[in-house]
Length: 260
Image 1: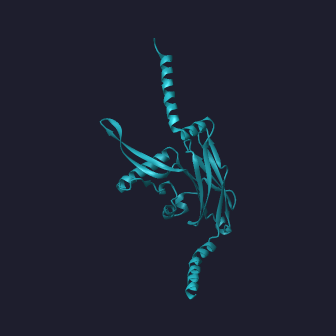
Image 2: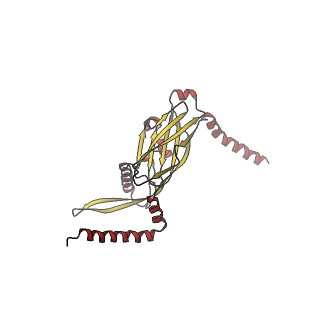
Image 3: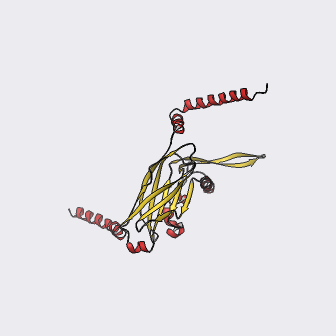
């Protein structure tokens, strides 16, 4: 019986720091998307996504001093990615080496209240895996040298940024009142279809307080959606159709443009 009471006291003592931290930082954050579904057609050229949010139990003094910061991320579905390196061999550019990464976010858009270095320190970003430079790119073959993995990781990030799939919008989070804010994130023209996750992080005086999330579905619509579903559900038939269409196009081109 005494041992049981001792165990209860130990558990209660372990819970005290968490309760004290919750009492010291009672703030929380909530977000809502302007739409939970984005339809993409053939002429889709990109769009802006608006996320609305609110702070709950915010300290009025801290709020007036502008010491609350919000960091919003829209992270695309994770898929394997192959990165290839080309070298010049006998006057030709040839793929000489490749590295495969697993579970790579296909897109990653960021909006912040101000410059990231003014929100919190780099260690917090690394611990929270916040920012494109802090996403862990897991190599499929971990036996490769760290220098090689780092080289291909940097190349992957640079390629994603060059295509607009990884983007930053500094100042894209704006407070509309003491507690309400709006975040604007950009969707690239080549944004991947699938389920995207919107995450909002609340910081107070550089200290991470709370996180919340919501989901966004990006789908193809119209004729493109029909082709996409057919290719996904009937890959072999779609391949035969593509080959037949190519042969038919070549045959018609030969008839139309023949000289005799």
